[in-house]
Image (cartoon, rainbow, N blue to C red; front, side, top):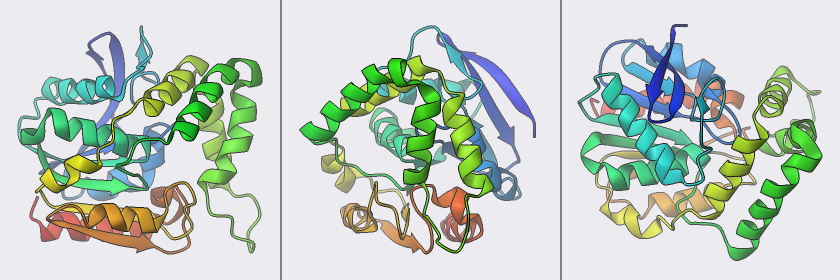
Length: 268
């Protein structure tokens, strides 16, 4: 899989750029990297140009200043598209924190967006309690370390199937979290705790949109995602069975089917 390292602002951004056709931008969740889209990149690239970066500070991307605001990540992505000579509109597909960044990306660049795919994400900002918890977690990561975080967080991200033992997906997720810089983890927590409430923006997003979530996602429930989707003028919601918060990894075949149906039916 061909990767490029591009200088974007103060960062060296690692990005996969594969395929030809209408562009689709895949943005990973927290605290993961572009490998979470491994089952989507090659499949989507059969009909579309897939642009899949590691966000600044995550995966193989490096930056001088950790991103303390989601708006900065959104600007990085817009500048990345320019650096790749992508001047047509893109379908933005983001999971969890990648979805939060997506609302900011749309707000900054509505003319750059032909469609939105919101995966296991919400439009509302954090409650005061959750935001406080994120700030505490941002400070404690330096004491507890990424290994402890990986072992605590990975099981919450995935649907626990009682018929199966710990599988390779969980092991891969743990490895990714453990390898992430504590500075980037802390900055991500702070950025998410300060994010804007995007719910008032949803009725203004009139491009085609797909909300897709896992049946057993306890972090972002399908009820909340369905409610958010109803606020957009041209959106649909799909629930994926037997999946938790990382639906593209856990049920890649079903996820890909619904996303490709959306992409092809809207002629992106």
